[in-house]
Amino acid sequence: MTGIAIENPVLTPEALLEHWQGHRRLTRRTIDAFPEDKLFQFSLGGMRTFGEMACEFLGMPLPIVHGMTTDTWAKFEFTKPTTKAEVLAEWDAQTRQLNEEFPAIQPARFSETMTAFGQWQMTGTQLVQYAIENEVHHRGQGYVYLRSLGIEPPHFWERD
Image (cartoon, rainbow, N blue to C red; front, side, top):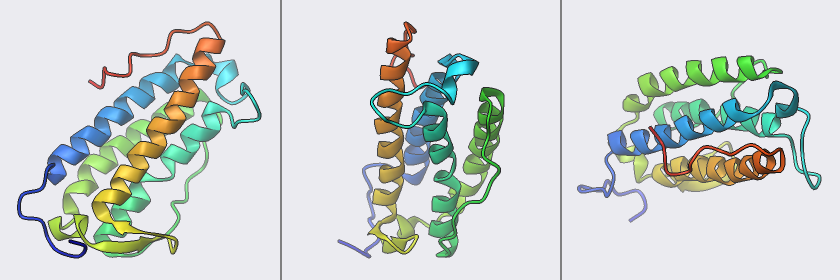
């Protein structure tokens, strides 16, 4: 069904955005749970710090929405935060922007196959799911970091 608009999607674009934002709310709470001195300094097993992972999350949503809206796949340029307060401020700004820009995606784009950033060939829905799954995967790493620091992470099912 690649390239064909789906009349009755399982999730509407509005529901998909809400699902994504639910994950983003949980990831925000995960970022906030880190002590300031550990967000960009603590890691295990050679993995990146959670602060570095958070910067990756910040680099994905808006370029994806922009690409799905305009078919222009440019890397998102922003000043990478270096403190927890800066990460959370950028997170909040991007959350508002995502809510404003996501509705501009034409419904047919969700079922169209596209090549995002010159490398990922998938439908628009799959691309949004990729961003969500990437965030969930790395948030799990953040949970391991928090637990190893003796901090209880947010409940994964609480996405309000």
